[in-house]
Structures are given as structure tokens and as C-alpha cells.
Length: 597
Image (tube, rainbow, N blue to C red):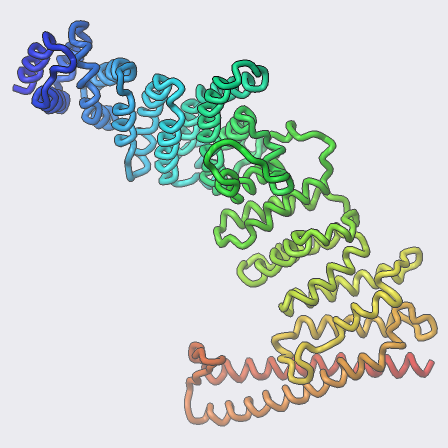
């Protein structure tokens, strides 16, 4: 029945001009054709659409048959699969050259929309080549349609799971690798055209008015390809862990990343310029995109990560770019992204930061670099984020130490002052004080004398260290790391520096330290011990009456603690106060011994 209806409408329309087809003709052709395909009569449909005398009808109405054909081809179960594929290819060929290929383009893009990973990968594999053919038929009018197509394709790619292991990438269990390869093939002719346009615009200065009009269209194409590259850098490349060649010799994702970097260079966006974008003068570029939209910060950070961590496109960088200059550029990317709560973003900037630091010689960063805010803020934000939000405390401190080691002596001094002034975190301040002790120890060794960690320059730093944030009322448990490192530093100075030499100035400053630090600390220890001993007594009394205690901090009620748990916590606090007092006593003993000899 459907086959007869299809044959009838084709025979009736074949004698009519193109513009004489009625709405009814379109409806009958579409419904009958789709029914034939669904009922397995695709061989007969193929015969009709291949008939030379029917080509005007196919050109006008044929694209309506694409949806059922695509569904059959995606399922791969129909015995007439080869006939459906032949019909599909012929319709694409004929309809692409029709006067309104945009209708075909929109129809194909609608068929891309899938929800599950398997049909997404299959539909992309099937439809990207036809989409490419349709876009190429649009000539110079293709830019906006290309942008719309790439956006739709990347939205589909974003739904695919990412491979996390070498085996998953090798086996392409989620089909992401095949999609990336297909996507590379899809954009290749447009990249080639953009490259050619770029070369022509550099060499051709004639016909200025016509040239300006052409350049507008060329810039639209470059803009769409740039948007595509930036979007792929943010996903999937930002979120996948690329494997090194030693781990995976042939990596489709690594190849895809390389192709994206090559595409950027081909369209007139050299990789070095993009990496150093934060330091370059904001340039006025053609197109409608604002600077921040044109070059998203996370995409540029991913780009720098690909270059400096995975060494992609590294051969495009002039050797005159020193490790310090590269670090300076990367610090901008790192700082821009450091406040992101996206785990993938934080991971890549952490790797980028480490790799950038490793290439720099120890002690080579001068103090004037600290005038650039990122050299102060990135190490601080990085270590605070690790200590406050991440389980990787050790790694955060390791990278912080690496950054400290790169500063010269004066820069270390200024950096420590900044950290003590602004960090407001006992653990970080304690680690900084430990570094100060190490720098003093180095300076006091024979042949290592310097003006920053001994004598008059050292005293202002010591005054920042040897003080209590809130005087005797300082919460000693909250500030334990800082307090203990301060006491260790003071004990070290008294042991190491002779009264007669006084290289650090500690002996002339000691009476001030006693007033500003030691006496308030002793008072604070006594007050805290008395408070916790009273709490311990009350808790032990309460234990006899009830088995569970409710504890509040501020206005927030904490989970119930058993009496045993709270008693244990109070004993631990009292032990801490005993430890602080024992170091204080030892410092007083050492001071008396030194001053009497």
C-alpha cells in the first residue's frame, strides 16, 4: 500500500515543475517513503530515488526520508541495511547541492540528539561526514552553520563518560576516542580553508574594499574554529588524564589534543601567544567575541598544561623563553583558576604549577618579582587550599616548599613577612616559621652570611614570629602549630647564637621577647590549664549521672560525645599545655646558663 502511494506521488510529480508540488504531495511522499523504509522495502525506495527522471523530486522532498533511514542505520539490524545506506548517501549527495542545504543541515543536527553513550557515538560516526558535505556546499556562507554544528556535536560529546585508565582508552570502552578522531576529520577541511585564508591575507594587499569584505567572512570562520578549540580544551581535554608515550604508545586523546593545538596555529592563534596571553597587551581582534569569552581562562590553563606538563607543541616555543618567564606566564593561568571548585581544574593547575617550578633554578627568583601579586598569592592560596579543602596535606606543603626554594634570600625574607601577615592559618604560619629557622641556620654557617636572616634585618621578622595573636587570651590549641614552631625557633636561637657574638640580635632583643611573648604565653598556659582542669572535673562528675554528653561550639550543636571521649579530649589538651610549659622552662634554663657564662 505504502509502496504504491510512493510510486503514485512520484509519477504524478515527475511531470510537474518544482514549484508546483503541493503540501499534500510532500506529506504523501514523506509518509509513504518512511513507511516503506520501516516495512523493509528500502530496495524499492532506492530504485525510485536513483531513477534519473526523479532527481528534481528527490532534491525537493528527499531529505524528509533521512530520520527513518538514520534510525535503521543506527540499529544495524535490518537485513536491507545496505539498501538504506545507499539511499542515505544518495539523498545526502543530491540534497546537499539543492538550493536550501540549510534545511538538510538542521535535519541532520536534529538526528544527532541522543541521550545514551552508545547511540551518541554511533550517530556522530554516521552523521559527521554528511554534515561536512552539507557545510562545504554552503561556500563562504558556512561560518555560522559550522559554529552551530560544532556546538551541537560538542554538546553530544560532553555526554560521553571519560576514560580514566590506560585500558579504557586502549579499548575505547566509552567510544570517546573514536568520536574525537571523527571530530578531527570533520573539522580538517575547514581548518585547511582557514589556514589558506590566513596565508592569503598576509600576502595579498590588492583590492582593499573587496578584501575587507572577504576578510570579514574569513574572520567569522576563524572565530568559530577558535570557539571550537577553546571549548574542546575545557571539555574533554581539561578533564582527562593524558597518558605519556611511555605508558600508552598510541593515545587517541593525546593525538586529539595535538590536533587542537595544531588547529590553533593554523587559524592564526600561535600556541606561545595563547600561553603568554595574560602578559600580552589586550589586542583588538575582529569578530564579536569579547576578550574573556574569546580566551576562557580555564581553556588557556588547560593549554598551558598540555604544553608544560605533557610537552605538546613544545617545539613551537622559541628557546629564548626562560623558565622564569614561562613560570611568570603560568602563574597568571594558575591564579585565575585557583578559586575554582572543579576538581579537574584544580588538578591540572596543580600539575602545571609543579612542572613550572621544577624548571626554575633554586634561589633564582629575585625579590622584585614579588611586586607581581601572583608570586605572593599563588603559593599562599595553593597551600591553604590543600590544608583546608584537600586530603593531600603533604603534597600541598611539598609544593609550597618547592616555591619557597626558588626565591633568592631577599625574596624569601619578604615572602615570609607577607605570609605571616596575611595567612591567618596556624598550620601555614608554623610551616613558615620552620622555614625561617632553616634560613637562619643556613646563614649562621661559615661562608653563608647574609644581611636578611641575621642582624638588624632579622629582628623585624622575629618580632612578627615571637608574639601571640590575642595575647594571653590566645586559643593555644587553635594556634598550637604556630606557638610550638615559635618556641622551637627561640630555643634554637638561644642555643646556636653566642651572647658574645649575637649574630641574630636575639640577646639584645630578649627582654622585649619576654614581655611580648614568653610572659603572655605563660599566663595563657596557666589560664587554659585551669579552664580545662575545671571542665575535666565537671565532665567526670557528669559521667556518674549520664552516659552521653551534648557539646556545642558557638551556636552549632556537635554530634553527641560519650563521657569517655570528652575526658580523653580534655586530657589531650592538658598534655599539650604541659608540653608548651616544658619548652618554656627549657628556654628559661638555657637563657640563664648562657647569660652566666
